Image (cartoon, rainbow over all chains, first blue to last red; front, side):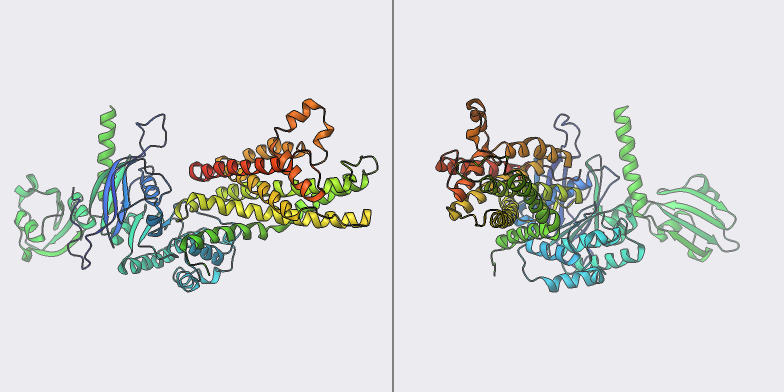
Length: 331
Length: 263
């Protein structure tokens, strides 16, 4: 597991950790301390990073987020926000959080809530920033509506505006796109990318893994409260998921029957139906290496289709393996 | 202009709490004043012929300070308790854990907002009482010690406001808060001398009554208005201060250790 390196190809220099979690454990039921929502969890997230925290339901993602924000008191382990203990006043100024569950704020309008929130962070006369956020989150026309009158998607966007009124250095997004339609989701992610480019560290938990794959430079996958994998998103997919390749051979070209009988190293499920050859290869192999192993040359090929692996496949593999390991340990 | 971020933060929460009860003023201000007015009509006016005056005053005069106290205390408690519970129900109480405001300032902001609602209700009940006084007796009630009146009102409201915070943070349902107000606080208010002098009770019940903290608050307020009290006014003041300290301690613990999640 790679804990030190991060996105060497990135133009940004990101060495200073914005978030450090060391041996964090969360126990809700004091009578059963062996039941841990988070179990000896450690990660370090760099300043300016777009980081994904993934896992199935009940994996402990929200407990980790809650520990970062101060919503949960850190009792076991250590959580630091730019070197300050999570939950401290200094740390709270640096964090904006979008919770998983919707908030109603029944009595107040959108504009009032955002003004109160600016005040909570010590900012007076913040209307310019509020207008900017409302505009970017397409809530400008709803500013004088009561929060109780907003739709689920609008409430979700209000939560994002609330988290950003004080221009935090770290934004924690706990499933922010749930209940938001496709068009608005795209607007939302464009805005998040813009924020990240301007230097905001973003930690995202989501069940939409294609979003995480597209946005997050690094992802951590957790299950049963434990960290299962922490890596560069591309590298993780490359290492965990095989690519499917479909060759269409030219007339006269054919696959060596020995290759079919004994597939070369790093390849599996080679099928040959007439001029079509289907195979799966590990992500590390280049096309040249594949052709060489199949005793083919580029001139034998009429067409190539490559189906790249996805974060979803990597996720399923890692979580599935962990689930099987847990079952066999119990058995 | 507030410059210290912490004070801006504190003031924002205080302002939000005040705005909350002012938005629903018909429930939070108007309704309690109407019920106090009804008490005055029923007990102070309609039944005044059969109810004896107390401590040298007509029953209407005796009743008004008690009702002022009852209104202030009850509304202070209701304000903080219902604000916390509604926030839990709306799922926004968790915001208090995320914002950079220390628990002690959260507690003070909620207490001061409760105090403000208590004072508004008390002032309106006082004005309604004055109208009835003038209509019924042709004169206004002359307050003996306005400063002490404000001090006792503030101490009582702060104590009840802080008890409301404590109850709100440690309750998991509206029923639990309602049980506290219906079965503990309201009986203490009614038995604390709002409608009668404690000296009317037989010695055994008088001893029991003096264990009720409300006796000291109500008597302090009555002394400030009428100049008469069942208990030494300085003892009332000391006991009220002690209760405010106790209330603040409980409320602070509620903010630090209470339940923030939606029920």
